[in-house]
Length: 499
Ligand SMILES: Nc1ncnc2c1ncn2[C@@H]1O[C@H](COP(=O)(O)OP(=O)(O)OP(=O)(O)O)[C@@H](O)[C@H]1O
Ligand SMILES: [Mg+2]
Image (cartoon, rainbow, N blue to C red; front, side):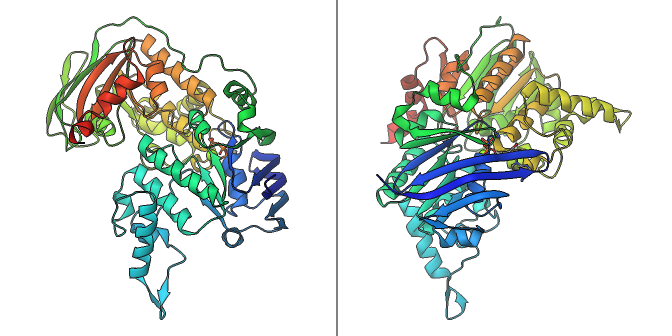
């Protein structure tokens, strides 16, 4: 039997108003991938943050390589070979890739910062992940997915023996995920133990040896991955069975609510035309970088358009900024919740109020009662887990932050709701809740357009599917005719031609 390299016992941690961990337990063995699973807010991130010295435990014990570590801080964690890739991007956006990778442990030569060696070492880890990036690139200019990969590079460069990955794939494409999994397999064969947190349960089979399941801050069960069925894993996580993972209901398809004609905006939105009808969920599939986010942003007036027409309910709308779009009845739930979706320094109540100030104000003065009522309603509608609406948004678990981002846009009357990767980082039961909300919206005659990189989700809940590749729409499939293969063929149409 492989030896335990981490043993955490009876770990408790309380935040104001929340018992995040209640006698939680975790064991990690040498050379294994251990998936740490649980619903949003179950305490996964808190537990691994304690292991990596980001948070201090209230009580409990931590043993690493058989040695009891009474006080774990970030320094002791690094000394014990523990590295963590955080759930939320944790980069200094104005620094270069090298700057980020070596932040706080810059290499020096004769007392002077040794840029050349750091650049070389950065290039080495970038190569290991198959990334063709210049180490001098300013990280803030990279797309989210690549920033995520840089974060992974940083952990690799420390030569960690215990590597924690908190939802590393939530912003990656399939190809990048494959690369990451190759790296994980390689690290495993070198004896590295990996704690892997993910809500993308379908990817677990590719790398997982063992699972540990948590619920409400407590340990539920652990065991070999192969000894559980997926349904068992889910019911341990959720505490009940989930029968229908992709609930889909047909609604009456009515008139066209959104029509996009000949939209051009930069390299990734070329002559894009499509429509969304009342009572319809249209899924936008494609690989990362296909132009899906850019298309939504151009429609929403968040990015400049070169040309094209946008019609809502048959009426041409002049949309030059986000305000025009909202007035026309179009809203967008963005993909990068930390950067674009939430004001982390504001409370949940304030975040929900922000896009709805017009509806919450009388003669320009905010009506506090209405504001509170709206926040309470949103929290209830989305089943957001928090101590109360005054909770700071920064302290919510990742999935609950995402729910706040979605809920605030659902509080107003819109005609078209666009969602960019709405279920990213969201647990199985919350995903079902979001699908049901989308079903309810379409039943009310609202047009729903959503981007997703998860094909089962696209196939599961769309009434119609649009596929993009390299800034262009390469095809459209009805729910009935769509298959993974057909979508992938359309999504890689131009790539295949050049190969
Ligand atoms: N810094 C903090 N201050 C206050 N509460 C916090 C803080 N960090 C986490 N919490 C709370 O602790 C609980 C556990 O959160 P945690 O982030 O560990 O969940 P998680 O299992 O990682 O969830 P997710 O899958 O959504 O990422 C949640 O109720 C969360 O709101
Ligand atoms: Mg988390």
